[in-house]
Length: 262
Image (cartoon, rainbow, N blue to C red):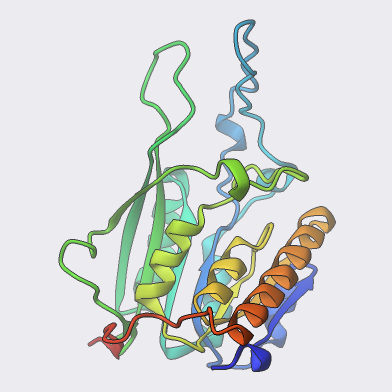
């Protein structure tokens, strides 16, 4: 597909309202990162004299209750029969996701993202917070690109966003790494597919989608994150158009498996 014909659409507002405008059976992949509701478990910032403070504060939006059961109806409605749903979550909500979505889909599984550079455990009490969970659900006939036995574990390792990848201003406390997002997009969608992220933050899912020749729809309620996402995605789109004109852009490698799984 020519990037001159490609588009992304992002909208500022409450996803619960915006998703109602998406047509039935129009989305190929929902890939999103809703609130984890970890605020009640936060111990606050840890101030240290010998290094930068460890920030355990969570954003205000994490204090608003997120109930997976409230999203089943709309997620099922907008997904195509061949569609997939992947959502980042934490241990405290995994059971709620399973309770709400397992009865509604043929398959409910999960992935583990192992963060190779988690924040240190200063007081050495308990484990480092080095893993995050991703729920995965689909119906028979869903799109599935099986790469290889080695690469299809429900486990992926990647560092948290650092360096140039990390958006500095405003800094999003839960920005997800492009490596993890692209891995999911590769196996759960095909080129030109339409990907939805109702909680897009600074637009990382959109960035990964555009760079992999997919289309993207995103919602974000916070002004500061929406503005950054808008700039990031517009910049990426223009960059890809220029690269394509120069003949520098290459699509996914030929021979990549692409089929619907039973």
